Length: 331
Image 1: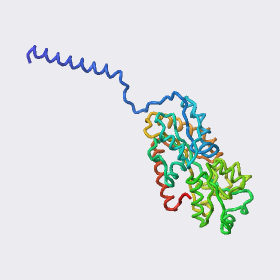
Image 2 (image 1 turned 30 degrees about the horizontal axis):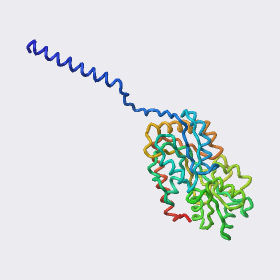
Image 3 (image 1 turned 30 degrees about the vertical axis):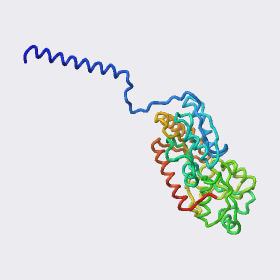
Image 4 (image 1 turned 135 degrees about the vertical axis):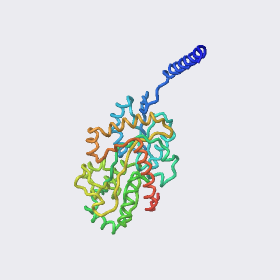
């Protein structure tokens, strides 16, 4: 190779190296891709919409963790109750809210897995952005204090002689569905009296306005001296009601628990959902939180955001099938 050819080749190589250097300098100003999700930093209060009245399981649960959630997110978490239509009103409000992280929904078995299979709703329950699971909780079948039955067998005998009434948190709520399943499994018939949430339903039961109700285990222990209890729906006994047998161990094939979690409007960016999800995961995995949950019969849902999304869809499909198979309809 001649000297001039070598000189030209060297010149081309130098220019190529210079170009690579310029590209490197330019890219230095671009954030490098990372497997770690960027953290969202909220700059204003976050509204947590509870689609039921104060006093119910969802409301009590979110108020329990709200201070810790506020601390981790660096902004106040404001609880707002928007009840009605078995949770559909509050759910639809969040569904149509801006996907900016400042309007979140306290989701539940009632509003997301059951109600959409029983009534026309203005949202697609499967299109929410999945954020986090918080806890699961069963129910206690309780009766008014002067009901002439003290055990489940006595209750079933009584139900053969008369049509009892039962309260619920609204038509299509889990309280409604679980009680209808109980009636189906025991071959009995009852008159449904829906209320606008579990809280008002319990007050009616305490006042003797209805005979029975599936009471959330979160609040049931405080009524053990005022109401009669016939069994609980979880697969196993709970610490807060150790002496109360499950319906399943008494031979009634009614088992299950409600769940509560957080959803965001469709299209919410991943960094927002991940930031809230991480904060909730830290809270529910904290031993202090577990101690808070245990006395009220709640079990922390420790799962990733992806696992919560799968769980959510599975629950939606499962209860849709249960409602169809049991031929449960709204009055």
